[in-house]
Length: 206
Length: 206
DNA sequence: GTCTATATGGCGATAGAC
DNA sequence: GTCTATCGCCATATAGAC
Image (cartoon, rainbow over all chains, first blue to last red):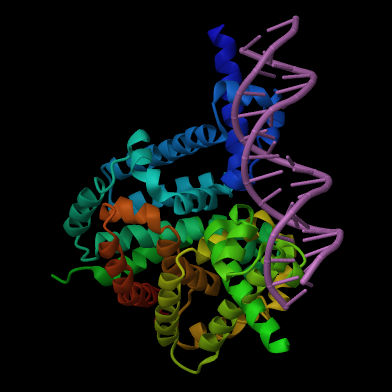
């Protein structure tokens, strides 16, 4: 029964995704994944030969989803500040729903960067391909900023405050969870404003 | 011999620091720490009763060092943009020397945030204490920006590009390590410029 | 395909000699 | 304080019945 296979495989993948993201490769336990998927531990090995293979499957899938979303936004034919706005909105929501995600990705990739290039190609992400169109657009709209700076500063301001939630929540909000969340949502606007103001400084005088 | 004790204890702490930062709590092996310290595995347990205690010792010490550096900068009596410059310089260098650091801190704290408040007090960091002076200074210099935004955006832009090195190095520099490093150093200036331009937008018109 | 039972290895921790 | 030897546990992985 291919139907049933598909069902079980998906349940495993979903459970594995949750556990791996929360606990990391080393911290995750096959038993916990099996429990969460409502199946037996040895079935994991039946579907995915080893923990490592299961992990790679999960990580590649996640990166693929994230990458494709980014691609869609960058290719739209709108002003740069509207791309910024779309990006901030989309990723803030994504990160609020998956607070462990950035840490997980960074962590696992940092500790095992060897397979990264393969992962990108598996996930259909072409490094460097989006930077040149961005550079053209910035120039066309009259901003002399280095596109690398532009991209990284934006990514940083969106991702970092969510990735570092526990620290930031205590350091800036005395541990108040709802105050933190409210603030992160408010950043959807304030980041766009901040970027807009910064861009003003880079405007080429005519 | 207290001299010898100190010596061994420090060797252990140093080795543990390196291994924990690189591998994380779960990934680290007591054997590897012992090897790196040039001693026997059971000596680890003689000095620090368990892996967990050793880990806590290491993490608290790291946070203490980082926190105190930040405190010094914030308290200096200079213009806000000069504080930004000092912060960017100091932490860029620190992070280039310890690229695994931010990931390590985020990761371990995210996965076990319970002891964080204790850790801050052990490390002599007083959450929230630096935000009010900063708010006053921003207002005094005529900038109407939310101090939380100001701090977080700065932290983000400094830390994120180093924390996410493997991804960024491939995504933006086609894996070229020296191009990446050169770029990170160049950010010492470009971040300050970016912040300065952004602040201009927040200047209260007189 | 799915289960139970078990093999296999590795790791943290301890005992005990020196 | 430092070592060798070893315990006991737990996690991944496999064998084999159904």
